[in-house]
Image (cartoon, rainbow, N blue to C red):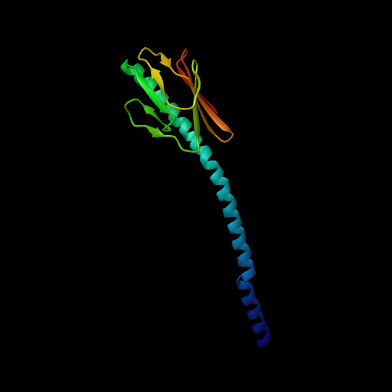
Length: 156
């Protein structure tokens, strides 16, 4: 009886833990999964910045338009393509991330890539301005002002 008890204890000890090889394999799989997920999330970050910037620009435009109508006075948004900033006239300029390109299409002047451009909103509801194009790699978002209806349209 003594021998069978001892051999049973020895077998149970072997079954309790993991071997070094099993632990190394698990660590390799975890490292591989973390590496792949890092690459995936690194590619989605600029896309999220592009979406966030389009929401921020369109909300600034909508705010300026509403402010002009409520106060009955002219409001303007200044887009500085050289300094890569935008904001309300007389307010704090917000930066455009360096990986996002920005251009403006004016109905009269055509494509604008440099300089300062103003989107003007009047207290009577009228507005002046073109379309802002934000792009990163293959993805482009347009923010268009419709002077007839007075709306801001974001197309992804």
